[in-house]
Image (cartoon, rainbow, N blue to C red):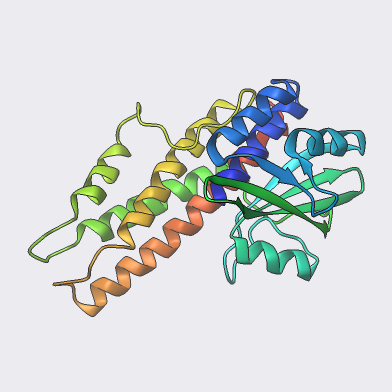
Length: 250
């Protein structure tokens, strides 16, 4: 559900800042994750109407949260919302003046062919989360990428690095490759950081499926540690990039 949350924040903020219209924003969000509903039955609404209702209610911005067990990245409570967000691995916090609404994505299946996303609302604390700035996240991502690349390439089994992982690592050096492009209106640095983080998330997913044949226990430990650090850096980079829509232009 990470992709759905990233898209909703990126395109929702582009709409709120006047860079795209509501129809364009919703079309972009649903293009990647299918039809989307906001709310719970019987008060659910299509995403377009749900966002419009939030705007009438004072919506001023959307924040991304990409928490993991032991790392509530982007969350500020209360516990019920945090617990559901950690289970889902993603959430969106809608800021409405002095209050906030937490939106947690869940798969919405109806029949054999319909697959969409339902955004379940929760009370959320409006306090700003403890997340890195875009510049901090950029630096940490670069360091984590270097360390993880060294750990992943230190493989001494007969098969070496699987070709999928090797290709994903090679893509990191290709500026043409794209990861998670943001919506119009975001700073250039945010676009670059989000694209790199998107490609690195693929590396993490592929590397975690690598077999450990031929590796010492120490090498396995170092690889797992590097992947945990890289995953944390990727999530922080995506959160910082998506939440930078309202940052002052330098």
